[in-house]
Figure (cartoon, helix red, strand yellow):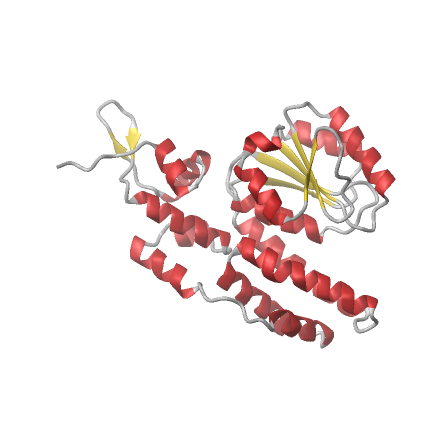
Length: 291
């Protein structure tokens, strides 16, 4: 009996990989491999579902598409199994110790190992967030100098930036930036990781961008959404005014999401997220983003 082939839409739904991403992978890397029907339509073997699921998970851990999509199904599963163990309970303490010692190689290697073991989203929740809080607490208690705090933040920022950029594929565009006067952008890199994992193309503006320039960038790039990171150091009144100005200046079809400790929670037309898991759930349910 001939194998029942499936459409790209069915493959996308079953694997969790967006149709646009599957098409990009097929065009660039020849995977997933399509069967051409006499009608000219493209169909896929159902076995591709597990391959694409495994590829999606490995990409979320920061592997490059060209490396992942060259693997067969057995090798993909081997890669997943090899990286499944959990990070040790003492990892944050080890990272903080490396930051205090200004030991860049030790800090960098420990962060990369944690990413590879946990994957992108668990790394954000279980390592990145707790480590950032531990660094902040240590600085407030005088256990960490300004130089040590900057060193730790920069090491983490470099890893996050390198990983989300490596995961980039063509897809719905999200502009990522902070409001005028906001120079803290570590949280914005974390948001970019979540976007890349979920198949969005990141248009990076970085910190401290004037409202008019944000609007211009969103318009010029025909972006589907705008992600704003607001730290606790930003004035609540200033953040509210800037977000209200942005919402009023952008078409209602552009989804605006604000996150971070300083983000206002009740601006009409601006979705507020409480954490990266919350953001991920919104991206998985586009109708919520548009609500």
